[in-house]
Length: 307
Image (cartoon, rainbow, N blue to C red):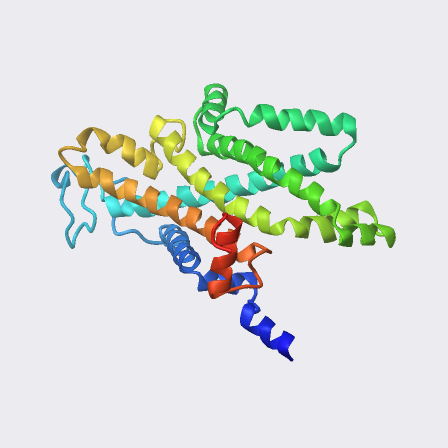
C-alpha cells in the first residue's frame, strides 16, 4: 500500500504521445499555424481576393486597407493574394522534400547499419561526404545543369536532409537492434525483414518523427533562399522567397512589402521548429511516464541540475 501510494505521488502515468503533444502549448500552437498554412494553400486553388499575377499601374505601393489587406507591390499586385498562392509552393516543397528525405535517409541508414561490410562502409563514407555539402550548393550545382525549378529544389533539399536523417538514424538503429526484445524475436525465429519492420523501425519512430519536422523547416527555409537567389520557383509562380527578392530594393521606402513575405517565412519556419521540440519531449521515453514537477526535475538532473 505504501509503495503504491509513493509511486502515485512520485510519478503520474501520462497519456499517448499525441495527447501530450497537443497539451503542450508549443505543440498546439505550431500545429495550428501549420494547419492554417495548409488550409491557405488549399483555399488559394479556388479563391484569392485578386489575381496574384494581375498588375495595376494605378495601384502601385498601396498601403494596407480594406480593399488590399496587406497592400500592393511595385506593379500593383495584391500582396495578400500572392502570399496565399506562395503558401502552395511552401506546402509542396515541404511535403515533397520531406518525403524524399525520409525515403533516402531511411535507405542509407538501414544499409549503413545492417548491410554487408563491403556495402556498409562505402555508404558510411558517402554519408560523411554528402553531409559536407550545403543544401544551397547542391541546388546550385543541379540548377546549373538542369535549370532552376521547384523540382531541383525538392531534389536538392531531399538529398541533403536525407543524409542528415541517415546520420541520426544509423546509430539509433544499431542501438535498437541490440535490445532484448529484438534478440528475443530473433531467437523465436522471426526473419530479418520481420524484425526490421515490426521491431527495429518502430523503435526509432520517435527520433524519425522529430527529424521529419526539422526537415520540413529546413526545406521551407531552403526553398525561400533558393527562390531569393533565382534558383527556385519560376518567375511566374509567386513564392515567398521571390517576393522578398523583388521588393528588397524598396525596403527603406516601402518596408511593409518586404515585411509580409519575410514574416510568413519566419512564422512557418518557427512553427516547424517548435513542433520538433514539442515532438521530442512528447516522444522521449525518459519523460513519458512523468509530468509536472517530476518531469521538470528529471530534465534538470539530465543537465546536471538539482538532485
